[in-house]
Image (cartoon, rainbow, N blue to C red; front, side):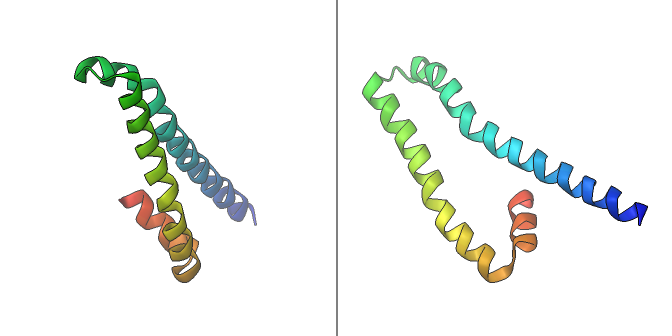
Length: 84
C-alpha cells in the first residue's frame, strides 16, 4: 500500500514538471521578443505578428492533440509529447 502512494506522488511530480515546462515554453516567448526584435530590427507591428503566429499555432495544435488523446489515451499521448 505504501508503494502505491509513492508511485502516485512520483507521477504527480512528473505531471507538474511537464505542466511547468509547457507554461515556461509559452511565457519565454514574451520575454524573448524584445531581444529577437533588436536582433532582426523588427517593428512593434512585426513583433505582434510573430507573437500572434506563435500563440495561434500553439492554440491550433491543442485541438488535434485533444482528439488524439481521446482516441489513443492520455498516457500514450503524454509519453509521445514528452519524447517529442
